Image 1 (cartoon, rainbow, N blue to C red):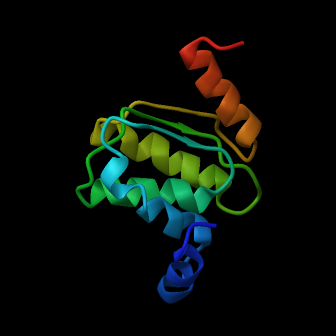
Image 2 (image 1 turned 90 degrees about the horizontal axis):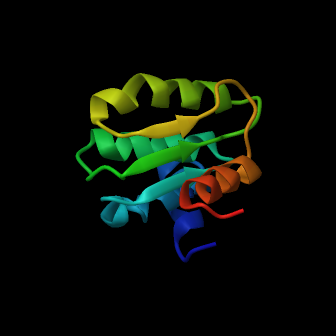
Length: 111
């Protein structure tokens, strides 16, 4: 719901999730990216890194659903090693915000 995201998505003929990721571009370097729902957000993160954005410290990717979820995670698996970005994901259509949160909590040692 950030200001301008809906309009940017409309102008670029993309999803609001992908448009919102563009706002992360300057903050990606050394960050931990956690994606729990939107395959288009994961695709956009990969596009930004491919385009020269400084990579995050890691990506925890758990997009869920029938449309693009498995494919976006396959793209991460295929491209992240070449981009030098560590990642955690789950193959297939399963995932979601709860898995992304559990992953991050596990990494930082929270119950």
